[in-house]
Length: 247
Image (cartoon, helix red, strand yellow):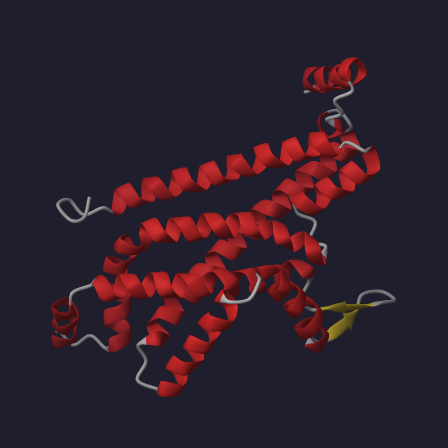
């Protein structure tokens, strides 16, 4: 590790390229904390958006018109407004409605900026996931659903154990694209001071005047994350592919 730090310190001394996060202990610690926060944010948003998508797709087929209209309104609202505006709305408007507690001389909200980022981005990506899952559900033959109902499955049971597993295979390519977009959209959380990579990189280049170097680090970091997600989703898609069906 010391050899690694010496290389970048020498690089700065000889060329002026200041990759300070790789040779300064304090900046390295802040950099690692930002990576961990970013990974947690991405994982939480991905899981929440998938849950919203699954529940929303089921609600779209509900017998109640009120539920169907609510889902249609939700989809239109989140798909037709900028995600950054949504984050600010959740944090500054809805955040003021959440109860607070005494955190030692000042009031702290029960939902942190990290929590609001997960909620807003999860609902944003979830609105697309609802339509993705709906398209997969519509690809499942009606005869399959009728057979499940004939075996005594309720609508919810048929959805969870028969329709959704089949629809999920069909949805994976489109779902992969949406989850990659969500990963990239998590950088917007810097707007409400979530200490993820974008926010931390901004602080580091403000302190050290090394914008170019930190932008290169950001690019490499997110290219790596997207590559890992795409690789994992591709492996998952291949593992779930039904021989003789589709590709």
